Amino acid sequence: MKKPMAGDFLIYDKTTGAYRADPEQLVRDDVEKHYWRNVVRTVIKDWRLYLMLVPMILVFLFWRYFPMYELLRCFKVDDAVKPVADQYFSGFYNFKLLLGGAGSDQMSLDFWRALRNTFLLSFYGLLFGFPMPIILALFFNEIKSNILRSAYQVMTYLPKFMSTVVMTSLVTMLVKQGSITTEMGIISRMLADIGLITEEVANAGLLNNPGFFRAIYQISGIWEGAGYDSIVYFAAIIAISPTSYEAAQIDGAGKMAQMRYVVLPAILSTIVIMLITRIGSLLSVGYEKVLLLYNTNTYVTADVVSTFSQRFGLENKLTGVASAAEMMGNLVSMLLVIGANTISRKASDVSLY
Image (cartoon, rainbow, N blue to C red):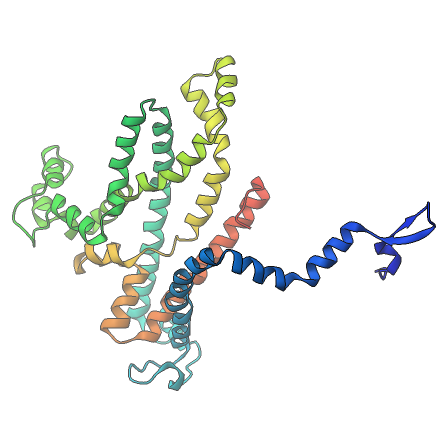
């Protein structure tokens, strides 16, 4: 590699026969020389904006970074009394318990079942739930009345602003578990009347039947989040230039053709970015909703990694095993994000980084 010389950064002036410094290089040198002084000046000038960052930084410190210290429990002997620093190092023993290499067959079976359920719930959510916000955004774009569109959007956004407890309570009331009341819910009665389920299944409660848990989880998830998630896609759609629609109309394109050849290509980059982030959460099903909907009768299809960790970590005091389970799920999620981003970057030149 050629070593840079002083003349490489100078410009030869033919009129004077002397070398002078490049003006652009002088600017770069000045910026590098006074970099931190400029940073301090910027912070002082916009101190109100940086002050607004303090709460967010504190939240990330206390709820994201400081808890990482507890990940050491994955490699320590379980002891609820001693702090993590005083516990004995156990290597990968907790991981062996989960993978079935340390003689705990039942725990290993429960973990693999939870891992399978987590993947299936997330995969079905990706398969059925991911396209719904896009479809909603396309429909919102076709509504010409601003008042009607605003009303429909508010109606679809509202479920997102309900707490998980309220939402799961509504779902439970609609299907009415037999343990809560002897009456059927509206959904259970409707399914029984049209013959999709038997009276025995309806009376026992759909949430007590493992075969219906995944469907209830996905349908309630679409009802809760599809409207709110459509905001991103609708914002991308309204940014499309009207001239694109006019050109398509001149070529004889109808509404469906405009959606296919104008709207979808214009928002493709947004769809890809959202898809990559969604793939990263395939093994990150939140425990709150599952915990409020499942019971011992539906463990076979409802138990996920988060509820497995909650049950073994809090109830059985096996914090090391619970931490190891969560770490394995997070590592797989990280690999999925990296893989999806790499494939997207090579296939379509659209990626997160």
